[in-house]
Length: 394
Ligand SMILES: [Zn+2]
Image (cartoon, rainbow, N blue to C red; front, side, top):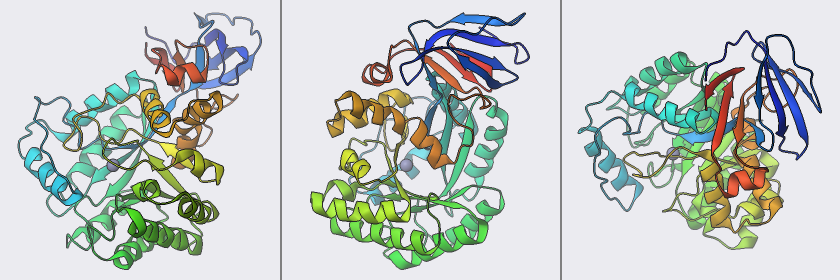
């Protein structure tokens, strides 16, 4: 189905996330009306969505567009028990791929869009071997697909910062190219220098007005120490709402009282936690974190790459996996999971004018489900994907 962005679109009788029934009028790319009953404008395209959930577009808070092997012939997964071993395995696998980064990433974009994702935050590998090649490919792709998917970027030092000399200068180059966030990786385990890596990241963030998103696999008390260090620097730097710790497995490895104490510091400083419910990591206790006021949001992380042979890029399925691992079964819990894949992820990305409100861009997805709970629990089929007022998937 195609739609001209210049013609009005009227979605009739949809179920909003609140449970209300409403018509939604889309005009010039934006939501022009939400009401019990909207009369049909001349020449409008009418779509009957009665009994179906009309949701804001899904937001995937953590992906790696440049890593995916989609679009290339199947390459067997190489095991690795530690992050260091996995980094080495990825280098081996990368040497066997003959399909360009941009082509593979475009295939993953198509997959995200097909499931109703309208915005993502993508980490992009930067190290002395890769240089800025992956970033340049993804920057090009971002422009080419911007009418279908909003892409925010993180300059990600996959081989470490101090551990891979030359990376710091490359990260700074990435900032100059307009990358929105500076990434990090296990300051203790990979760099052996918590202070050194955090000094560099927070220094760059301050100098370039960037956000920060740090992969933290470091576990137990060490990981908790690093979370506290990050919270303290975030607070001191006035970066509330601009700092994310991805994974934070340590929060799933310590007592509830330690989690609560750490959560208080994260919430107080405005540090968000991203979880992908990775199968190989400890699961942060999402309900406890939310009850402590921590901003928690969701992402798929790796999709069909050297880190994971799994994944279909569906954020509804990912939200269900998070809820499943955390025992989040009540309607309230499932709504929280839905929020992690929609409004909470949008907040992390700083998406302005996100959501079902008049005047906002019409980024919507229609689920074949009667509620947000059913949409998540069943990761229900998507019947329609609309971005900027245009139908881009059915
Ligand atoms: Zn990641």
